[in-house]
Image (cartoon, rainbow, N blue to C red; front, side):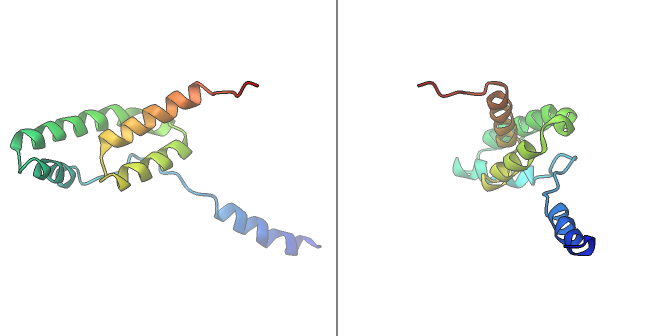
Length: 109
């Protein structure tokens, strides 16, 4: 096999590696909190509390986002989007992933 036959598969493999965003995702926080509030009959108190929780989670994640491993960012963004696109859920997932990575388990016989 010559170099021209080897290069295309390598180039394709390199291009297929997932790209992880270095910037924190943007979610429709108002829409998410409106949905949460509507579950309680449209409560303004629930809406405002949700907005506060989302802001706190966003503020905690923004300065450290680039230091979080790309695989955790990608996985937790997917989890947060499936759950309604919530920064609180994103932060909870990132926290759990970080804790799990820092406390690897082993199996004992």
